[in-house]
Amino acid sequence: MDKRLKIVAAFLAVVLAVLGGRLAYIQIFQHDELAEIAKGQSMITLNGSNSRGIIYDRNGVPLVADCKSFVYIIKKDDFDRVTARLLREMGAEQIVNDDETYYVYTSDNYDKEAGKRLIDDCDAYILQASARYGEDQVAEHLIGYVNSSDSSGAAGLELMYEDKLSGLDRKVYAAADVNGDILRGRGLVITSEAENDSYISEGIRTTLDKDIQKKAEEAIETVDNDCCAVVLDVATGGVVAMACTPGFDPSKAVEYIEGGGDELVNKATQGEFAPGSLFKIVVAAAALESGMMPDYTCNCSGSVQLSEVSIKCETGGETGHGSIDFSEAFAESCNCFFIEIGKQIGADKIIETAERMGLGKTILEGYPHESAGHLMSSEERAADAIGNLCIGQGETLVTPLQMAAMTLVIASGGVYKDVHLLMEDEPQGQQVISSHTAEIIGEMMECVTSEGTASSLEMKDASGYPKAAVKTGTAEYGAKEDGTSHGWISGYAPCEAPEYVITVLVEGGGSGSSSAGPIFKEILDYLDESGSYARPTFT
Image (cartoon, rainbow, N blue to C red):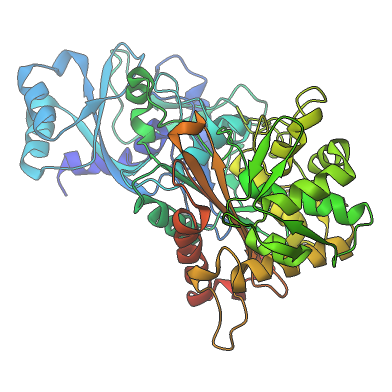
C-alpha cells in the first residue's frame, strides 16, 4: 500500500473532529499511550476543536453527520498557487482553523487525479468522513445550526443541547515533532479539561421520525406559499415532525443571516399568526365546561350585530344558516353561533380555557427563541372585541406548535401533555378539561371531516368513517380590504385511539380546507399507507 495511503488511514478520524462527527470513532489508537502524549508539549490542535455529538431520530437514525465529505490538511509552508488551484477545482472550501501551521479545507466531491497531485506535490493529508450537514438536510429549522468559528450551537437543538452535543469541551490533537509536523502513524488523541478524559458524548436521541419528517417536508415544498407542518405523538407528546418553508442550508447560515431573509426562522415555534376558526375549539371547550349543553341551538341570520360592529358569518351566505345546533355550527364554522355562546360565557372564561390548553405561553421548555403568542388582555377583549375573540381574530396570536398542543388536549381526552423533543424525557400530563368535553369536541371534529368544511378532502375509509378528526380555519391578516388570510387545519388520527396530531398552516393560503387541507391529507395518507400507525409505543 502506498505510504501516503497509510497516512490517510491513520488520520481517518480527523474529519469527524473537524466536522463534528461522533467522538466514539475518533479514538482509534491505544488510549493510554495517546493520553500520555497529550500531556506533552509537541502537540498541534486540529480545528474545529469542539467535537459534537450526533443528533438522532427516535429510531436511532442520524439526522446530522449522515453525508460524506472530504477534508484536506495542508501545512501552510507547502501551500502555493498550485495547491489553491487544485482545491478550487474540487470545490473545496476553507474551514476556520486557528492553528498557525496547517490549513484545513473540505469538499463534498473528490477528484482522484487532483487528490494525487495534492498528496505528491503539496504533502497533503486527505481524509473522508461525515459532514455535519448535507444538501438535503432534514429538520433544519428544528435542528438549527452551529457557529462557523468554533462549531458551538447557534440555534435550535444545536443550541438547546449545546452541553450534551459539545460534551466537556474536548479538543482533538495530533502528535507533532519539534518542527510542528504531524507525526505519521501516531494517530489522534482526545483530551478534556474534565477529570475523566475518556468521557465520550454519544449525542441526543430526539422524538423525531426521519421518514415522517421527510414526508412532511415533501408535502409543504409542493406549495408556492410559505408553509408549516407539525406532527405530534399523541401517546407521549413528542414532536414527530416539524417542517417549514422556505428551507435553508445549515452549513451556510452566515449567508442567510447577511441576506436578511426569514429562511432561518422556525415558523412552527417563532411565527405568530391569528388562529382564525381553530380558536373555536377553545370557545367550544369553554362553553361546555361552563355547563352549556351539546344540543344548544341558536339562530344564524348571516351576521351578528354588536353595539358598534357587525361581523359576518362567512359560511352562512346572505341569509345565514338559520336554526343551527352546536355540532352543525362547529362543522360549518358558523361565526354567529360562536359569538353568541361567547357572549353568554364571557371573555374571561374563554381566555382562562385558552391558557389551560397551552396558548399564551411557550410549549417547548428551554427551546431557543420560541414565541409565546398573545392572548387578548382584559382591555383588548372588552365590549365588542368579544366578537373577534370568539372567531380567532383581533389581537389573538398563536404559533403552529401551540395549535398542535391545543389539538393534542382533545386527542388525549382533555389531558395537556408536555410537548418535548428528547426520547428520554418523561411525558407529564395534567387534566385541563374534562374527558367528556374532549369527547364531545372530538365527535364534532369528526363531523368537520365527514360533512363540514373539510368534507371536500374526502378523508374517509371504505365504510365512510372519517380517517381523522379536524378543524379548519381561515385567519384574516393585514388590511381588511386586501382580503388576505392564512389557511389552517389541525386534527388527529385515527379517530379511535388517536396516535398522531397533525397541524398545518399555509401563509396567505386563504381557505384552510383548500390550502392547508391537501397537505394534511398527504401526511395522513402517508401515515396510513406506510404502516406508521403500527408504532403505538415508540419504546
